Image (cartoon, rainbow, N blue to C red; front, side, top):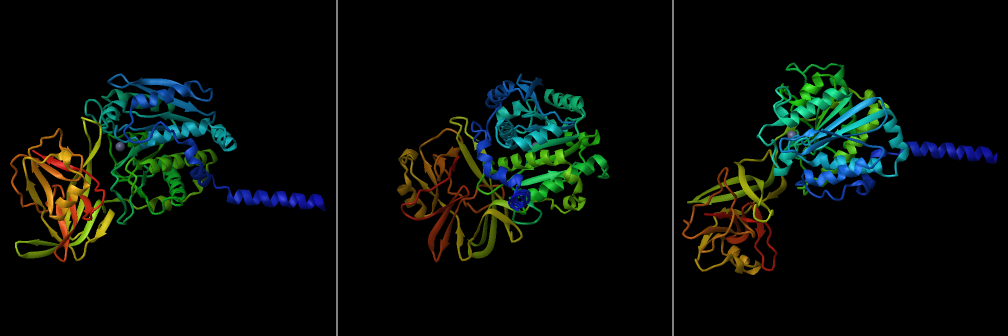
Length: 486
Ligand SMILES: [Zn+2]
């Protein structure tokens, strides 16, 4: 009887384990353990990943081979691990300013080197052999630009093969003839999932191999695996998964790899609120890739229905960085209601590497069908133009938060001084002009920076400086940067 009870307990606990052992949930919880700590933001470059690749050379489980060099002489490495029959090839950052998946790949290496999860890893690596080609475009990464040294888009060079980096990628592809390929990119963070308010955090695509967008057995595998990964990700980022445009692009790598027999999956890391360095999306990359390895090892994705993929919404254009709604614009006796959609463009200062932002009024008028990462209803507020304060004696160095408050509360959004500065940005939330500067009729206009004041009942409540909203209140620390007009 005792033995029976014992066996029963074992059976029940095994059942409970299998029911509740959720690999992805566990990986989600344990992720910090694997995060490569030396990669902390988006603007890392080739010299940052070289020491990490050196480490792998000392690990007997990994094989590291030089795959070639970029035009400027930076080495590309093909890194492989596993003994399985199914080959999976992953390449990242063929666009130099799209590094999210590269960072995730180094997290995956840490995961594979760690002593934990040994059973599941042993299982995966007995069925699958993984090949990684991280940072395909190191020369672009060095400058944090999309294209390579010659300003050629590597992803439009899959057939003509004029770039060093394109040739390397194609040679590795030909040498592997992998079963699965992962084409890892970043997309505009402002894509929405369909016409919803949710950002397209991860967009997938099973690229088409012809203009008719036919589905053959190779593409079908990509479609099924994406369906399975979408269901998994929906547990962590519900509604934030979308599908990239599926128009056939005959010059792109993904489309051609699909045509040449590798089931190819495009992964685009998009936007996530308050995650400008995409560190959360990096975690999602880690999660979806490890999950994909497991699915491929087991073949579980084959049970998925193609409809799951069909039902993923396409990328939409329904998100601004900032959406300000329902303001009254007063101008020369006319009062109209407007919404403002504002986006920010990032610049890195050559002087001190600091990141500055320039606001751009992307759209205005009735924007009621759109959304903002930051989305504020200013019903009842009057939008008026800011004023320029001119004093050749005033110096930017003497301006603290109290002084800023004084300017804001009087409606000034621009200082005209005798103080000339380097570059185009002001390291505090006030616009600056050098010397004589006309007091402009500074209404919000398409393509221009957003500078104005917001009044309620005749009192200035907010000023907007280069798209940064400042609540006019004494004692506040005002945030953001202004622009320098020469
Ligand atoms: Zn890209």
